[in-house]
Length: 127
Length: 127
DNA sequence: CTGCATCCTACATGATACTG
DNA sequence: CAGTATCATGTAGGATGCAG
Image (spheres, protein in one colour):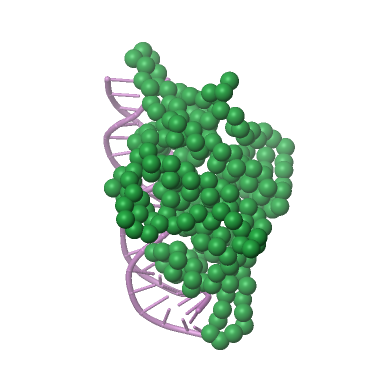
């Protein structure tokens, strides 16, 4: 039996599930795989998320140790979010999900004109 | 731009998200990685899911081509669910999520006595 | 055994406006 | 710029009972 944050789990899969089982967290992590980002940049790149939801999701991710939050005491304010090591460890999973999505499109979907996301294969730390 | 089931996506990640981003689908797939199963067996192994929800999730998974549904014309009825090839392709992702969960427990959780799930590394097809 | 039909509730998320 | 504060709502999922 696993115990995390006073919750009990019998399967390690459900731990991961519990952490990013909503509409936005995986997407936020996905964009942070490119490197640390400011609140504003996330707000723009994540898409149609509202500020309230973005703030709430960032707090949850921080609480669960997937991201860090660095505050610069400036005017105007500056806050930078970045993946923690355990958050960074999601990279291969996200990339595999990306590949699976491509496979799925080839079997059951089509490709249209327009911009699409690129995978985030390599770590920025390498560069 | 990807088009699947009349929905447009700009990122392949969101396709995967759209398909198993709820409380139960990943868990159902996880158990089907052991091999095909009857409705009753899923109902018991998945856990605290209700019949209504299980049925609904199985329909969604079938509709999205992740599982197949085979009906045996017997009394009492027998229905067997199994992963399709594209569903089976989720195995490495699920296993990596499992491993990530273990990592997460080591950093931010604890281990207690009690039964835990095993990973589903190999395909049953191999055996 | 394998479902479907109702009814119901909680929570995640959205819309909008405001603040230091 | 980086958030709160309110208010509103859709829908996923639960509880329960019935059916072929």
